[in-house]
Amino acid sequence: MNAVDLATKTASPAMSAARGTVGAAITAFLEACGVKLAFGVISIHNMPILDAMGERGTIRFVTARGEAGAASMADAAARVTGSLGVVLTSTGTACGNAAGGMVEAQTAGTPLVHITGQIEAPYLDRDMAYIHEAKDQLTLLKAVSKAAFRVRAPEEALPTLKRAVQIALTAPSGPVSVEIPIDIQAAEIPWPTDLAPLPIRAAAPDEAALDRLADALATAKRPLIWAGGGARGAGKGLRALLDLGFGLMTSTQGRGTIPESDPRALGAFSVSPPMEALFKTCDAMLAVGTRLRGNETLKYKLGLPQPFYRIDADPASDGRGYANAAFVEGDAALALEGLAARLAGRMHIDPAFGDDLAATKSAAIAGLHRALGSGHTAWMEAIAAAIGHGAPWVRDVTLSNSMWGNRMPPLMQPRQGVHALGGGIGLGLSMGIGAALARPDAKTFALIGDGGLQLGLAELATAVEQEAPLVMLVMNSGGYGVIKNIQDAAYGGRRRYVDLLTPDFAALCASIGMTHRRLRDFAEGPAALDWAKQQQGPVMLEVDMASAGDFATNFAGPPVRKPA
Image (cartoon, rainbow, N blue to C red):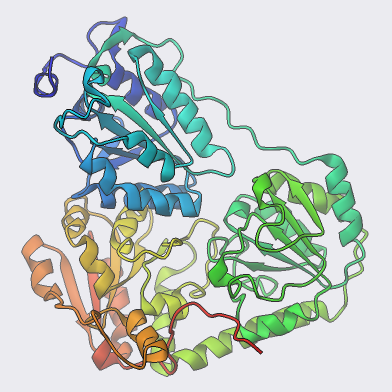
């Protein structure tokens, strides 16, 4: 039976009370995992699964306009909920289309399962130019995934997917891919008696290692924690350490782990001059669940407080980027709670440290305001008021985000922020859709540049079709603003390939029934944002950057340490 025969087969996914298709069993297992949303594009090589998903009617399948967008939607949905993301693609070109989104999910450590179809098993790896065939697709998937598997027989499908979900959710989490040939998807099997997912075990830290770390930190009078995305579930332990006198800063991914309204929580201002000045006064730093990314550490030349200690679920983090005086492998929540218990009653914090933390935070924010100028600061503050204490804050790689979106507005929840950590533009719209559909309780706000938006314009139709509760803040400068600034700073002002033919976004929105409003002055911001929050479905607020005005200073690429 060929692919077309399988795709047009009309038998019910549940063929009898005791038997069913592999596609139906996969769907039932995803339901058992608590999956409510899945994203993708239907094709002849994933149709047995999606037919079963539609028949069962439990999981909402979101039809994206492209696999690249679908992968980013699933990524963002997983980030804002802390649950498993699911994306389904076809094989070959379609699978390749998802690769960029998978790289981003890998960078962010997103627990995501990518289920991709494959051609019929008898034709695999024979280089016959069979429709949707891709040479060595599994190797491609291994490169963009934490792990990748190929199902080779119907009875292997459910055990393989169970293992894939377990790996995706086990720290350090990440995307896992599973190839399933279409004939296997459609095969009938005895209905599984056990659809329960495999257990996810948190790695317990070594007790003796925690004892040694506690003994080392007990003498610190001005200790600072750097918390990354791996610490987002460790709020209890972090709060306990802050109550003992520790200060806290975060990576971009770790923002909101402790509400940024807390004066002890300094946010993601790692390379600001006030933060660097504070580092020189600290006598210990503990990094937890962070890879200390190059653009947040001046390419690993940022002078961090010494001695430097580290906690991470990934043993490969030991000494990576920065040498550490001690390393504890294990789950961040377990390690921090154990550490706080060991340090209770032992810390003798400098009485001035708390005031110095608050002063550093105020100085860093004031410096950001000066860099923005009054107009952009007012716009940022209006957005902060609109977002409130929990709405998802999604950002593409665009000038406004590089200037302020990665640091402000204040985030109050550990899963509130979503950003393209890998640095690729064009993910903001799709990520905004995924976050909005996963968090229908609040309006999602997405900060997007006009250049990045054009990479995925088709997904505007997905947002409308799915009635996503999304406010897109499109900062329209008519081209690639960050690249222009880099060319001005490093290439003698030779601007090449950065000015883009930009669509008439108002007309484009009208053509698909999307609500649109253009702003030419930041003074319009508060009223426009209030209006946007009241609209049903997606809204585009387009800011005419030429009319609104320039920043007081310009961002020209990630900061670096200049030679002395």
